[in-house]
Length: 286
Ligand code: NAP
Image 1 (spheres, protein in one colour):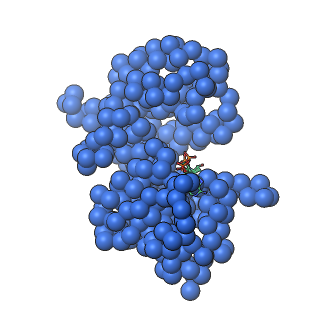
Image 2 (cartoon, rainbow, N blue to C red):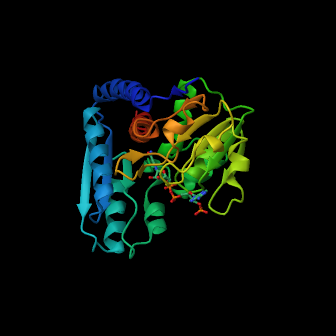
């Protein structure tokens, strides 16, 4: 039997259509959701990401300001810019593209963003609220993963979810959200001994490592749901995930492809957070 493909592109399109309709309803009241995307330096991958975020915003009728600065920008200037964006009523979401140049303290920058505009969900206030199950902007990639599971009617309740990776932006929050959906969660990372022993117990396996085709069918139990967050290049320079897709097709029950799985969901959830922020603001000022 071959695994069912979890089509993140199609699901993200559906989410984006819903967003576009809500944007139109806000526009009728004179409100345009605005996202400020700040890019410091000239990292090519970051450039690609911010351009695609801006394009998606505009396609959905939202405003997007791409603010680009040289790598030499000072921390002080960046913090001042964020202060200005925090006060700008037409900006509902602020995203500072990571990584930042070494002389800028990423944490200082993240905490400078008003939590009400923290559409990436990286501010400690957002992380704290998410962790205790209160309303918060959820980090886009883990939120996108939950949406995919929901769309394919894969209920994490009672299942063993094994998350490989413990970064603050993907692995850690993915585990927290799955726990809130009543999964039993195990985290694995680079110091985990005998990784296979854990992955083979997974009903749902989330891989956020960043190593091309690192996991094969030997890592899976029959019928596992595989969510591959990794975005890597294979030996031919082709985009691929952490999972050897062809190898596991006969073992997994569901799998996200790379590209076309988790990636498109991340952007869709960013758009949703920006829209939510604008909707919240509009209710408060009604
Ligand atoms: P990261 O900060 O580098 O974290 C990687 C995690 O993998 C770490 O926790 C690390 O463990 C663990 N790890 C590394 N080697 C391992 C091994 N051999 N066995 C088990 N665990 C291992 O990366 P990230 O930002 O979370 O991103 C992970 C991947 O997802 C990357 O490929 C990235 O490009 C991709 N990504 C995709 C999207 C999307 O929208 N599709 C969004 C974000 C990220 P330690 O903590 O012990 O070092």
